[in-house]
Amino acid sequence: MLRPMRALVAGLVLVLGLLASAAPASAQRSLDIGRFRPALDHHGFFGVQGTTPPGPWRWNVGMWLSYAKSPLVGVVGGEERDVIRHRFVGDFQAQLGIGGRFALGLDVPLVLHQSTRTQVLEDGGPTIPAQAVGDPRVVARVRLVGQDAVAHRERSEGPGLALMAAATLPLGDEDAFAGEGQLTLDLQAIGDFRVFGLGAGLMLGWRHRPNDRVVGGVTFRDQLLFGFGLQVPVPVLEGLSALLDVRGEFDARFGGGSARRAVEGTLGVALRRNQVSYTTGVGVGFTPAVGTPSVRVVFGVQWAPRTPDQDADGIPDDEDECPHLPEDFDGFEDEDGCMDPDNDMDFIPDVDDRCPNEEALEGQDADEDGCTDPAPAGGAGGEGTPEGGAAEEGSPVGVETNGAAENGDGGEDGGAEDGGAEDGAAEDGAETDGAETDGAETDGAETDGAAEDGAETDGAAEGGGGPAVEGDAAPEAVEGDAAPEVQDGDAEDARVGAQPGAPDGA
Image (cartoon, rainbow, N blue to C red; front, side):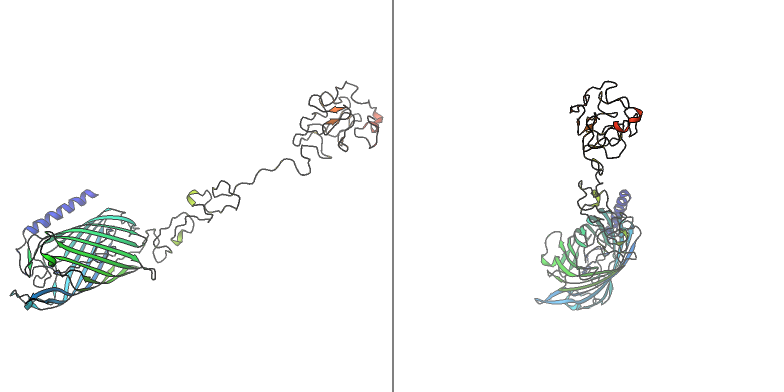
């Protein structure tokens, strides 16, 4: 897209050069003494233009009124006298954005009234008119560095760099010091930086005149241009900011004395309300140059018919609680226009928070990922079950708890399986799972931690006479001798775990 623009600028420069070569020769009074050339939109300062264009096919219009006291002074008999004592000028402007980086503008100055003393000039010319038309100024600008001014973003933050070309058309009244009778060309490099409503701008440029202009014995030709602008928000009122602007024009040959070195500054305020911007300021001239007034007062009104959205987040400024900070649109309170870097307020930024909308419980986020840690698994042993896996009283034998023996009396780790110690359990007449077989019963085998006739108690078998060891928990039983043979009718006398006080081995 830059190639067509380069071709357009090259063509414009060529046409302006041809017009300049055909300009008339120098003449007295053929000098525009209007030093104040206001910015085309609210992105600028007073006389220093900003880099941001209006946006694709967006437009704005404006009007500036300025008063200058003693902008042109002559010397008669060694005494300074005003040639133009008071001057009121109106500038009428229009600007159109082309794409996101280009803009075309027009500025037409009109001398509304000026009080003059023609005799002071002693040039034999006609009376200086009280009203006049100035040379219209056509402006083209391209932003090279910075964000595009797309449809949803009117103002961009950060640095910006632009080139601007401005040509004046020789249509103004030369006798009124409002026209030069020839085409002039300004080329400017503009840089600015903006953040949170604070802005600073710098301009460096060159003004070319094809032919000399002489006023009061002072010759004007090419000039160096410079300007500096500063904008600071004033928090007492929304949209209010303070502006400072310093501008100057020096003769490119660095000669001619102070009459060709014009420097002035303006201090004031700007107020933006929806689509309208108001700017006013008071300035003074720092040098006694031609066109530099002792005092200058300016007032401007600019209208940009679009929805103001300073932070370019798509939320209009009148509905945006944070007009200078864009919304982050993360699904959390997106309608207020403010970014929410920590939705759940757990002091873990959302970019690092795995649960950005749910606050972690205090003391339950060991890995600091923003999520509550899961509850730990249940501890060893059930309620009422002795640690180490002893069987509960009355529970079916064969249910293993924490290392308890299967299908038999409960034992500690390494306890006997299948109803008793390995190679030591009685085979004939032994019963598992709490059922009686030939008078042998296992359920409730433990009494006060001691089991009779080969049952384990706390790892020790009384009938075996020693500690129960896996594979050797009880003396080797011989079939038919593990327990007294019980007749069908004597089951009660042979119960394992007989009544307390029964003889050992009964």
